[in-house]
Length: 141
Image 1 (tube, rainbow, N blue to C red):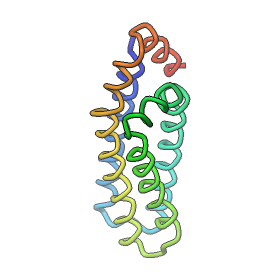
Image 2 (cartoon, rainbow, N blue to C red; image 1 turned 90 degrees about the vertical axis):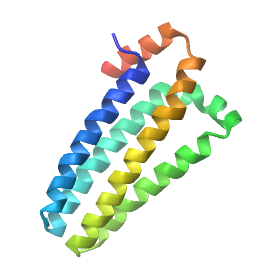
Image 3 (tube, helix red, strand yellow; image 1 turned 180 degrees about the vertical axis):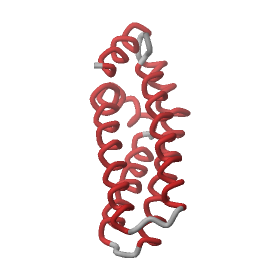
């Protein structure tokens, strides 16, 4: 049975493996339309992942993060990451679309690392071990 933080770290790992594959595709000079399809896939997966983080852990931690000043950097990261996708979809230049998607993937990796190094330890210190397990079980559902 995994805790919620273990589940999120696992999900980050799977997403990063997918990002690696997308970057291999981007290295092969795909068309702008192909890059846009990849960007849409990443957007959907990140949206789903973000909903889980917010629903299962975010509401519990918001007050703690605000007190520690840790919430603003997380939201700034989210805005930076999500800002790349509309630009990918607006361009017809495949090289530019690839660069923008690569920037989004890179920013997302850095954000995952920040969560794992700062947010998840706070979660583990704030919540009881049983609660972390229950949230992990809810994540699996």
